[in-house]
Image (cartoon, rainbow over all chains, first blue to last red; front, top):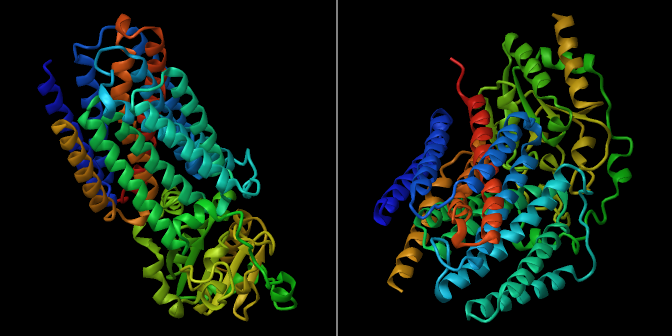
Length: 464
Length: 95
């Protein structure tokens, strides 16, 4: 096929990607959107394979079979609660692939992937840098999410300075490479520094900020693909990489706004911030926390008209989504209106709670975002908070000295009664006590999330 | 040089288009959006195929790196689209 024909097909696949992402703007069209994007990928791959510059298919076949098997196994086996880890892993693989492409391109003396001139060499340097950071950064994020690594910030004094030094080192190397000075040795040095940088950039970031990190790494994997596109002047790589880069950046911004933090604060601030000063947990809770029982709460639910369920990461930990759905069904059969109130950073990645609830076959109309559910808490009889903590902490509204002051929260305390299902009074990611637990209208239901919800449903059914 | 300007224009326009599109995606679909866009970033597979298929011209290291890239990018593409499909099917309205 001639080059212009190939480019026309690449255009077609870029159009399919755009149409596909547009489909993702509504749940009704989303499945088809994803399918369109997959077809776009198929078009790009088939056209590339038919390109006459491909001389041998053996290596390709091996890679495709191996990668396809691993990908399919991962996608079908992974539990919905582990979706943040899955996305972190996939981000890393995308970055790693771009890194390997850039290295191959540097070594290729001629042919379709060989880079020409300053621009090509500059693009190789940038792809290696971004791809390597994405690879190891994602690996660390995966380790934290999978709890192979401790979730709290890890690092040493001056790690930000250390990272800045590494980054400036890489910039110098990229510039040297672009100038045509330096061979494979220098490129390997660049890759090594960038791989270290990926680790040291992500490891000091705490578990609470993981949604931001995953979104940002998502963006990086797109930028790496776009940079690889500049190496060989491949339009479909440039366009799709740019789309993904933009997508990740927007999600990063949404997450930062939802936590009232700046991106710089998330990336560099974790170790320097002093959390929870002047707020003693014993002082907040002393004598004011009321522990309740499933029977007592089921009596409250019997007379309720409107119930809002607020899930957090604890729901995922306890695998309680199906139990919650059963409780909601039981309530709805009694004529109670049940709504799910979702904070943007509930869970460990954007939209994670929605996926878990969808798995339990909750209608997406009943999942309401914060802005929609907040004005109606005053007319709500019972709020059930399951495994959510910081996103309901009234300190964010009231205590100017609090580290989370200004973070938008779910105003659950305005409801007539708040039931908090929780293992203990231990603090959430932010490490802060939650005055909500000590409020007059709050009842604590201590225990495993799933068991507590099952008990509630049981008590309701017994009463019926 | 003209070619480069054209490519940069393409990049900038695609970023703008991406921003416009993504801001319209509801929070409910943010996780599938991430895994789906992730699968799209596996487009680097195109470059990987060209590297892995370059045969004798490129030499052994190019083939090896290309094959590694093909493997990683295929995991990304196949895993990404399949898992997104699995999630989105759960969001379908049950009639």
